[in-house]
View (cartoon, rainbow, N blue to C red):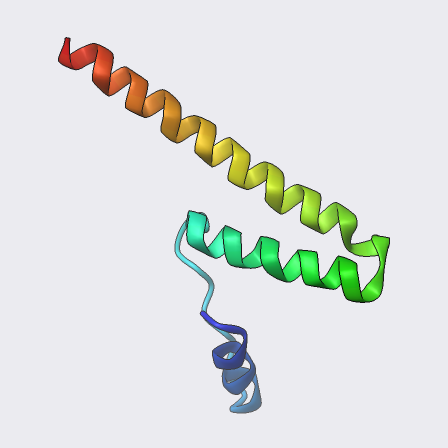
Length: 76
């Protein structure tokens, strides 16, 4: 759900929907870009947010690499 969609839902007196499951890599990449802009515009107070999202992306990347390697090994 985009921020605009969530804001519109709140204006109508409804609770915004909660994502079903973990965020996708593309959602995390958008969040990382937003966090980077926050750090640049508003200072280092937002650095922990940027670092957290960056770590999440790295963890997903490593997991994908491991799965790809397992598939390659299993295929022989």
